[in-house]
Length: 477
Image (cartoon, rainbow, N blue to C red; front, side, top):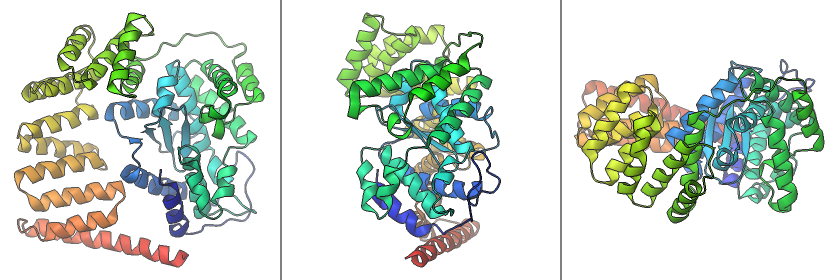
């Protein structure tokens, strides 16, 4: 990650918001850094991650599952009103981390390495508690004062500790000390464990997954020493934490909680996407041959994914076909469409996606795929109508605006193309690029009076916003 440049940017841009003294642990009423301020810091960092971070994984199927699981937990958390967004990071290590304002990053290795859905839920429940209790805002305190700049530096140090470029943050002033002390305190970890346990229980998961996960982490840490799972570096697992978690389950009635098929399929897909296509295929074939799986449907789905990656669409289709006859799932429909496209059957892919959307009309991954399939077939007006419909439900979806811009380009509507691309850039956090697109829209020569007026108004708005951000940056120099 571009930790050093991010840190420099936020230390310059974020205005101070100071308070005299910190509340006691558990009391958030007097925090000088309001939830709105925390959200602003988180939003700013996330915009930059989406735009520049190569390890940001926007896979719509895996992201949708992660957010469905996360929101189920949030609804049973200490603050169900808090807005959360869960996102994936392409990294094989076991790790997860919370940023200010409800943004929680999860390494793909965490989903793959989880032995059950309850274990993954336990990790998320713990991170959710760090957010609802505003632990990072408290960590940003210094001599009784809080500031958004310090919170941003703390958040970026968390990113540094959770990346392969952890030393980069040390290049900026105080960041070295911040990075060295980023691990949550024992009190914060204990509180996150306690609240996470309650959230896990209320959400219907197996609470035994929490101490089981802790024990496995601790063993891994002893086994690998300096190469221990990254999660241990920011969330050190102690014997005390394990004992506390084990004590909480004493006396509870044992209840087996089966893993959901969504968890199994997403886990299988991420595993099949790891490493080289040859290694992934060998792994999938070996798991089935040796019966090393907890769910055969997911194992066969993983093989189909791996076969497609290995450019063997005919074999992939043959592997997927029996699954689709016995189980109806949107991820099967999405894979079937990708296989048909790999075979050159774009019409068949579009037809299959249309049928799947009749059963799953709100599935965003299927809608993305169907829009792209229509565009590949040259049915840009149909695609444009579907994009408009989706934007009514998801007006802050940068991917949809990007698809809209592509469709308008194919239709020769240059003003609308640049206007849509501008909105995509705004949502990705690049105001200069958005302004440039609107300037191109002004010069397109194909817009009517009302369209040009809309472009002019939006351009003025974005210029004011950029001017304000530039002013704040100069004031901080």
